[in-house]
Image 1: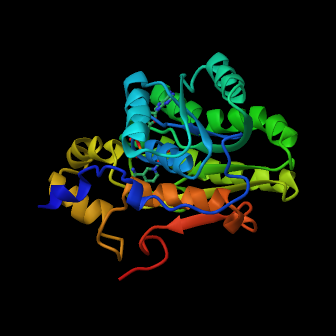
Image 2: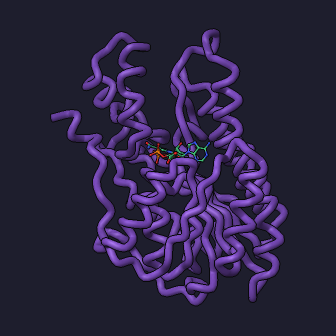
Length: 285
Ligand code: NAD
């Protein structure tokens, strides 16, 4: 069944990769946004299994509770501290960083929260544009700004920001203008952090094709309607048509890339993008 392709898989301890890294300790805190669902949830679990204390934030309180419970069920080694907050509200962004700092030394930031809106440019509601921009671009910039002084205060003065970009930060599909613009901008933020970080504060982005998460399942019907095609055709033609690997990624596959980026394996990954898109953007038939 085509739609089995998008069933959201559970994260298991066996699928999480760990890196033996001297900075992956309970003293060091990794802030993860969007931690109540999909890729953010997988990153929170994966960072915790790698021994970090995770400040898991989302505005979906129930989703965050699920992440904490999953951490306990799976038995991840680090703790997951939930912080409810809305990334469109500056006071919340400030509180998220301040609360995260009460759990240890803030050393890593994973900007993952996101949303989608499907409409042609001429119909695109500007309030949806502004909301997407705030969550997916402005909040990552403000969080970075607030985290840098904490990175500088860690025992080695180092820190790292991982940004969840997308193939839509390289090339674009129609009817997603706010998403496309935000992802291109996020790659600009990634490079800006690297430019100013002198190799001590690093940054990287992760660009994947489609990943099995609620964000994808929720846009199937709108995309089908907008294009006048079936949901199966959206999956097979729109989402996987360009990809040489005819299979969507699991959230934990993406989370493992964040671990590589944050760890010593990523020492020379600075401003760069991990393009894991199954050949989608660099090949054609
Ligand atoms: P998801 O919908 O499962 O998770 C997104 C999370 O962001 C949700 O928990 C949601 O509550 C949170 N969020 C949304 N608005 C928020 C706000 N105002 N304040 C705080 N939290 C908020 O989606 P996902 O697929 O896991 O997406 C995560 C990221 O990965 C997004 O940036 C998305 O663009 C990116 N991405 C996803 C795919 C994919 O195919 N799923 C591919 C490439 C990139």
